[in-house]
Image 1 (spheres, rainbow, N blue to C red):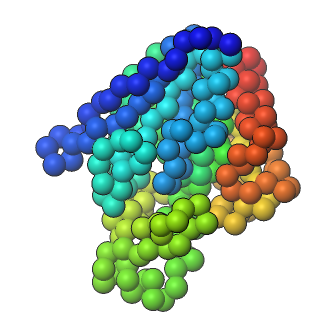
Image 2 (cartoon, rainbow, N blue to C red; image 1 turned 90 degrees about the vertical axis):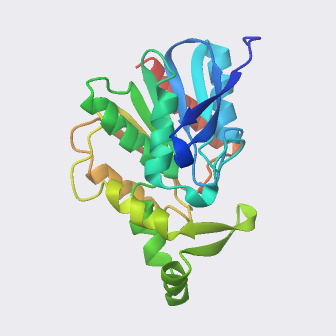
Length: 258
């Protein structure tokens, strides 16, 4: 195991009132690097992110983790968060990597990973590979809006937000009208999704937040890239059990040395 430690630093994204400081931790190493994109309200110190960092330490791979604005130790207000904003931050942090990268995205991070991969492909520098854990592309319109009650729809329109209880936090999750409306700009379903690289999807069969049918729908949109979907029958949304982290590690290593 390498004795080196990941180096923390901060970058500024946006200008003027849109400016926010993004906290990053990057482990030096060789390629392909591992680039982590967390989920909605998660941070770069979670068990999956740290398992990737440990894998990087063991194999001498570069690992880059960061917190979106309003998450973890980054600056910015969570209530101002949108897919556009968090994607902009992901691109800015990605620019701090070097060499080929494997992008690993969890839940909402899976959506952002697909959007980032599409942009990289358009520039002629596709990702080395994608690992998507319970990916939630189009979550604003496919998963959130359909689940809102009439009272929540009223709150969204009249107050500009709703607060939903979460089993992952003692405080409710705030979902803003801005997040929902901005999500419309980034919808992927309805046309072919191109990444230009191999894609591995890990999906829990008992996921109450992103059902297996959502992962299957994603696969049907990926017509030109090699895709592997692994359904874990007893897996939940987080897929953070020891055996799940072993699956994550194995998936990443399949892309490191194909």
